[in-house]
Length: 427
Image (cartoon, rainbow, N blue to C red; front, side, top):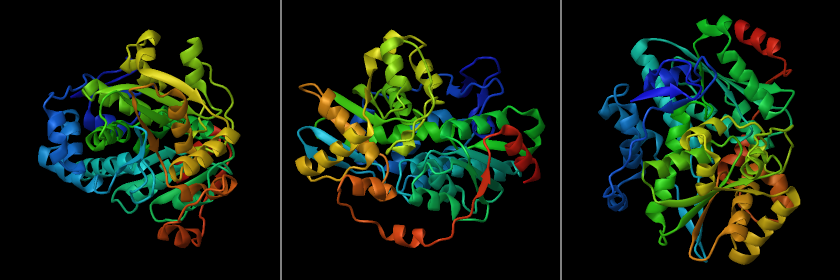
């Protein structure tokens, strides 16, 4: 399998090269040269396979030529070794709980797979990598945990100062070792822009830069697995509608990849907070990023999502095709709190502020005969102040208390690229 740039100005590369390079030199994103379609009888086999086996079966066609089959199976079984339950709330409504991994967020799925792939490639080639990753909340913690003490890998995490929750900040700033946290005086979009500029800077080629954001094909593609896993568990499989809390749009486009591969999903809802560039695009046809707004659902505070170009690629750059599968939805902070309260009163279910937006979109948008699945992307404990605002009940996991007692280690930098470049050249 080869991978091309969405800007189509550079040659196709192997899976290994796409993972190691992360970003093509023409500033596009890597995309598979063909989408592997699953045989129809594969759906019948789902009930008898594990999550690790499912990951292996779905990803193997894309990794051929770069990772031997047995090694990929080992990687998949190690990476996807935790529960992803589909919880029925009744009324043909489900919550897909993606917070049962080691850092209690959906990013564990892609980050653990990427870390093991990159570790394998580095060992095979006797090389070292410097991972750059921008985070709006959960990516940083998942990447830090996934890559902590991986031989031949250093990780630099950029996060917007004051715009991630305290627990999220502790997750990405307290491991030390090969993990360095940069606290950027700016927004997530500023952090993401710094990372992209570094990849395109010829002066930094010798550093062996790679990325663990969803711009990396090995972070993005594994996220399609849990859409299949949700289908496996659902009792009502007809007319499935997935509502995805959306920030950088890696999650929802990976679900669309699953549909293109043959998973019978009827449609998607892009559940957005005030940073609603895609919902507005779906209405106007104009992609119009605006300054990022800080909200209660901070992991979605993105107003120029990288994976917009993969959305276009999946639907051949035709808005009319996108509109057949995708509907936008936007919810402000106060309505998010009300949605959290509604989940408790109606179903006795605790929603985090991101899942609450997905939940509310299904309350408003689900049609008769449809079955709704919203993604609970992170454990409520990561958003304690917002949970308290909503008077929501939740039980902190044991890890949270010990984590909060750890000492934060971060380096404050400006949003200026020259400052970031100076840090990298001296790192």
